[in-house]
Length: 82
Image (cartoon, rainbow, N blue to C red; front, side, top):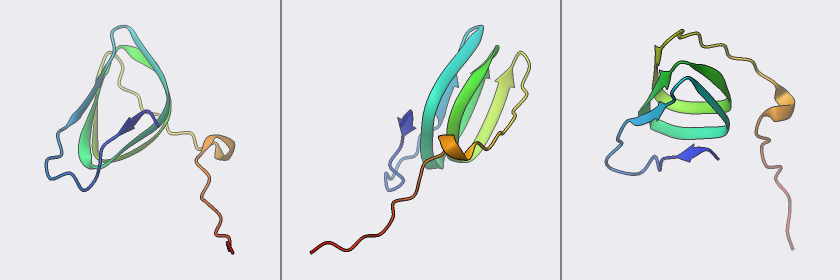
């Protein structure tokens, strides 16, 4: 988990992820009711992003979404416990 914001929180401040010349991060950004501002030069975010809104600004704002199943979160399988 890279960033987590409780969806039940009454105040949902915007999240700002800012980098200088490059940003490199891996993980999950989970803020389903928040705005995420991505700002910076260039970089790689190997992340799952779950937000209400996403705004990207900076040098070259190209957002490429590559779905790689082996790197994605796996759902929990239900099991019986005695």
